Image (cartoon, rainbow, N blue to C red; front, side, top):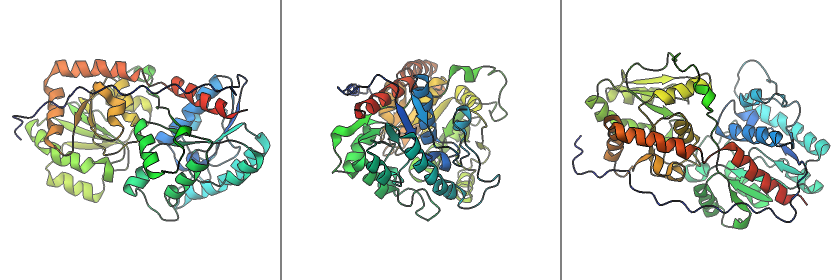
Length: 410
């Protein structure tokens, strides 16, 4: 397609207003706190951004000398708990069946309620939006903190509402718990504004914006000369994560098809989610991209880091993200980034990425071509990404969470 007359999408981005640090209130408690997290997201997720977030909080709080608890004996297969040996988990059964994760979650309620009774935490932090714990907390006078990661369900009606689904009551429960919580954490300013839009009765003064950190550590690129078999020998673009609906994957394919014809050796590697379904396969074939696109699974962060580090660029076409952890992962692995100028993505990427707009689909191809054809732009983006990711650490995130917890303990 012709690119004449298009303006560069790398417009200067106004710096985001610096968020004020969370105040250390007069009830500040310098002693170790007893903080209890519940079972919910760990029973549901084998891996994923929400369970990684809570695992990083627990790791960081323990490192600071605080007493951090999960309920004993609940069922989970979460990979991040393997890295936290103090927190035991076990599988319900060695085989999968419909409703297994729902059953794990329902059984876990008993373990979490028992933990509230016996541990008597100073602060409780549920990991999802089932309000099963609220009557017991209110009876015992224990404050709780709720984290809201995004408002995808409210905006897109995302997910199945069947009985076997995590999404069945999430909109109602999220609003109810946000209004009941002693403090609410959102992972971006964009999510804070969306939360207030959908929950107008919520007290804005109890909302704290705390950004995520980056979990891709430099050591994961050691021995990177031993390449994963998933890495193409030619140039490739990288897509990471789920692909349905608002993730905008099929839109991206349709508007990059001409680029793949222009550059015959260019490939696209897709990581995460499930394998291509029939509808996706039909579209890929229709666009003539069957030999261009590869779906791969990765077994470790090290392998994912290799895919980032050797990609020509990472593309995140999503229409909505509460934060966008893959952006930080790409920055940490020296991978140039192309983002949709939507939701929280400019808040995270700032001037370290190139942007496109879905209303101007040709801007996607232009942004990718700039990285492929201009080495100076590519190297500048890599340098900016390395600097940008330093602003997002789990240590900072944990410290800000701790300040919220301490403000609630009298």
